[in-house]
Length: 306
Image (tube, rainbow, N blue to C red; front, side, top):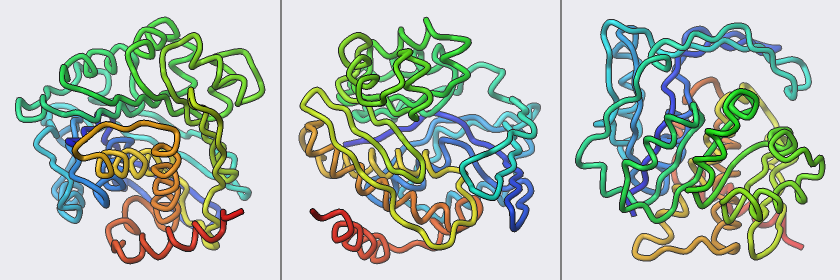
C-alpha cells in the first residue's frame, strides 16, 4: 500500500570522536524515506530552501523507490540545519546549533497524487503541523507518529490531540517517561495505549534495542551489534523507515498491525538502521544492496533465536 512520510529535510554538520562531516544531507524525512525504499515505494513531503543544491537532490536519485514530487523548494528561504557533537561512548550527544529555516514557515503542500496514501508516517515536527498533515489523508488505514522531548515540554496538549488520531507511536525511553511520569517503559507504554490513543507504542532504547508495547502484549528486540560505528545520526529515523516500509510491503493488499506483524517489521527496521550508522549521512544506504539486507536479517534472526 502507498506509504508516505512527512517531516524534515536537513543539512547537518556532525562531529564524532574520529571525524567531522560538514553540511551533509540529513533530516528525519530523508533517512526514513531512504530506509523504507528497500521494501516499498515511499512518497516524501517536505520543504527545503534555496541552499538545497543539486548535490543534495542527486542523493535521492540513488533511491529509485523514493518519490520526491512532494519536495517543495523555496528559493528565498533556508533549509533546516542542525549541528551536533557525539562523545566517546556514542550515547551522549550535544546539539551545537539549530537553524529552523523553512520549518518556521507554513508546511509544504501535499500533491494531489499523494492523497490516496494508506500508510502514513509523521516524522518529528510540531504536533500542530503533524495533525494538519494527518488529516489531509482521508484514506489512511495505518498512521504512526514520531515526536521528541521538545514537543512534550512545549506543546503537550497539541501532541495529545494528534495522538488521539494515530495507530502507533515511536518514542525513546526518556520521552515515554516525560509523557507519562512513569519511569518503567513497559508501564509507560501501557498507560499511553490505555489513555492516549495509539494501539501500539515502540520505545527506543538506543544500543539496547527497543520495546514493543501492543494491546496484544509486550515484546523486546535487541539492536544489531555493529562493530564499526561511524555516525549514529539518523538511526532512529532509519529504524522507523525500515519498520514502516516492511509493514506496508508485507500487507500490500490488506491491513495487519497485529503484534506479530509489528515485531517482524521492527526486526527489519533494526537491520536497516544498523547499516545507517556505518557511515555519515546516507552514504552507506546509497551503497546498500538488497542481498546485504537479506544476509544481515538472516544473521539477526540467528542472534535473537531462543
